Amino acid sequence: MEAENLELAAANRWDIVQVMPKSKLTKEEELEYVIEPQVRQFCGNIFFRDSLKTADNITNNGSFGLVDTGKKKLLVTCCHIWDGFQMERLKNPDLQMRIGLGKKETVVFSPGSAIGENRNLDIATFDMEPLLAAFGGSKFYHLNQNPVREVAKGDVLFFIGFPGRLRRLIDGVAIFGRSPYGLSVCGVDGWRFFSDISKVAMHQDELGGISGCPCFLVRWGKPIQLVGFATHVLMRNLLFFTHARCLNPDGTINNHQGVTN
Image 1 (cartoon, rainbow, N blue to C red):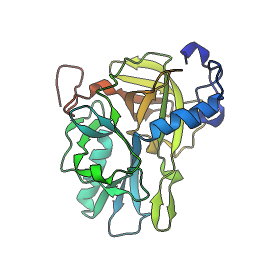
Image 2: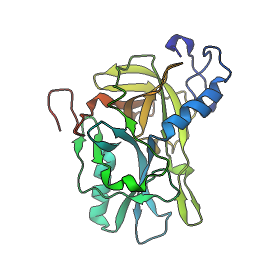
Image 3: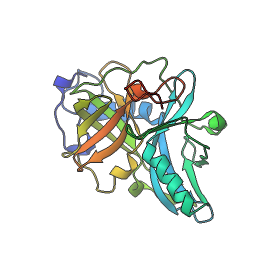
């Protein structure tokens, strides 16, 4: 799917539209039945909850990506999510951080520290080896087998967020709904790139569940490729991502200036 074959669509949250090369599937079917299931297995929801209260007592939530570098199996999310949890826990020692790994029940995620933290890039990485037995349908994206490519203006991205407004309590269990998005890159600045979301139909409460989600490059006839992680929105118009090339094989983070954090 080439950038010149795409134009803006207001409907159905897709900024990817119009003409795709002839296929048995429509554009919506391709995204829903082919691309979305692939992306879904590499991401999940992360949230904070008081362990002594009911399951719906959730104070904050975001997203994460699962990455296998060949040397480390990592959970990658935003640094501001990790910082926010530590700050809230100072006030409430009973606060838990929990993650969804493809099962109905979420699991407690309690790393002593991050492997890598970079607040300029807003990325934090964590070792997932202790939780491998808790995996359900979730999988690691093999970054070592799929080298990260550069991102250019006009590239098409696909990602899934877990906004709090889609959360439901079913049989005493907090269930997070997911919200998929397709956007075009409108600018690149070093190891950051961004998309214009001003014309994308989006609920005002949806942005909070996007932070930390992995985004994938979509090209017709080729496998999806992890290229970055959503970090923040500027003026409700631009959604920023940090490039996945910042991840070192050992899980530390390279800030693109010769310094590893």
